[in-house]
Length: 119
Image 1: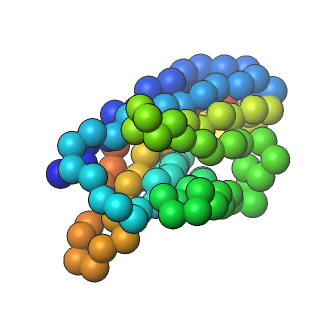
Image 2: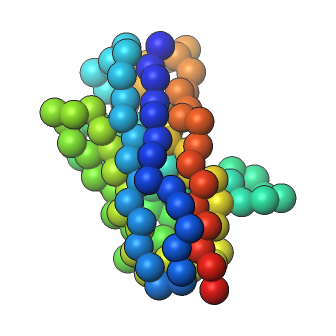
Image 3: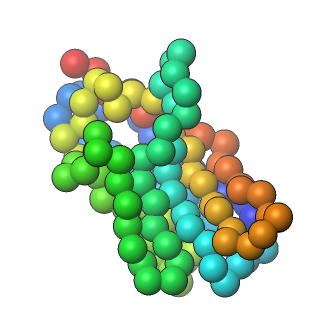
């Protein structure tokens, strides 16, 4: 099992910044992706950003490109999401995701952290 612990959510005014963290522990895989998803009230969970274990490529949803940056600290098994120029529409619960690139192994999810952006 992979355990994921998120932190860093909170309340911020529009235009402000927050940094989310996701610390991974437990079982590890040699190839995987890690990323962030979010779910706003009444909406489906959506992709935000992810990075790969192999070549450290990063991918972003169009809605956050240029404002959010995903990164990780391998030594600490921790992933970060730096969120700048936040908008009210970024308000959601943000979930950390660990996706092993192994057939038949399911994804792992964190418990979620609330991000609220006031206008």
